[in-house]
Image 1 (spheres, one colour):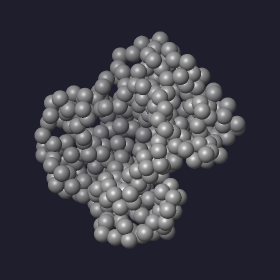
Image 2 (cartoon, one colour; image 1 turned 60 degrees about the horizontal axis):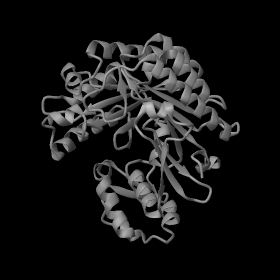
Image 3 (cartoon, one colour; image 1 turned 45 degrees about the horizontal axis):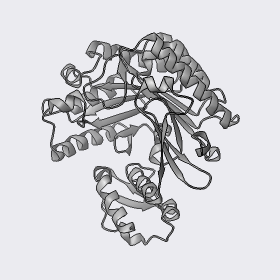
Amino acid sequence: MSFLESFDINKGLSLYIHVPFCISKCSYCAFYSRSGCSDSLMDAYLERLLEELDQVNGIMAGRRFDTAFIGGGNPGCLGPRRLERIAQAVCKCGRPSEFSVEMNPESLDESFFPLFSDCFTRLSMGVQSLDEKALGFLGRNADLLNTRKGLGLSQKLREQTGCDLSYDLITCLGSWHDELKDVRELTGNYPSDHLSVYALTLEEGTPLFERKPALPSEDEQYEILSRVWDYLKTIGFEHYEVSNFARPGKRCAHNCRYWAYGQYLGLGPGAASTAFSEDGSVHRYQFRPDVGSYVSSGLFGGYDKEDLNRNESVEELVLMGLRYKGGLDLARLETMVQKTIDMSIFEGISGFQIIDNHLIPDDEGFMTADAAASAILGKLY
């Protein structure tokens, strides 16, 4: 079974495109990207990606993608001309109901605005902090002045095109950092529809990991996150996934596809896919994190395949569902484990409640989601 044949198009399909270019690599970032790339390499990447998109549009048979997301890296590095060609290819069979693009503050300018009138419906901007010291600590390319400039432009973009805005922040940097001040300043001065608020983790292989800074303990992180979560709720944000908050009706539909363990196709070096075949089998594909291999490989030739067994699929369903307000679908869980589940296995797992046959987390559940998943999986088998 080929890469594209693994997807059951009748189940609908979301699309993720990975852009592996950035101006400079942030100290904390473990996602695949390269800085200082030539125009010729970006053009070669673009042509290979467009060839793959043409093949994908062929299997869509006139159906549009449910959602699409262009991430990175920093897609803004491609410039408006290249990004427009990608966006138009994604929209060939119709504009997705939600079409997001990531961009860092220093990359956004008004030359990108027409793309949001015609293609993109949503901008996701990696702000990370409004504290100069924090930006330096994280190794961000944009200083505070350019970060504020990009935020101002994003506000103008929404005024002119009506697009949705999402901002990212990183918390739990150390005792010297005031996370709540960051959140208050961002939400007070730059209104948005969505926020992603992540606790900093030290990823092996990153410069920040090598520096081994003193980060808050688990108990301290709990206190920091609780204060941030409580504040965001007071100003009208729904906490709908461990690190994600939205105004009413503004959840990120694309990311909800991941958390609901839905089907999605990923293109580009480092991009992953989850395919549900018509026979019920589950497949994972990923292209190695190497843009040189991507541009030189035959179409879809470099996507490594992993066939998930039933237990692996069940584990992913549980892990994802317990981190998300959509919850763990218990009817789907029974179908996947092929037996009736004794609901008493969920007793004693605090932070969750069963609503409409879904196990739904509250804030306590978000804090303990991984432990709860381990406990449930242990009882299932």
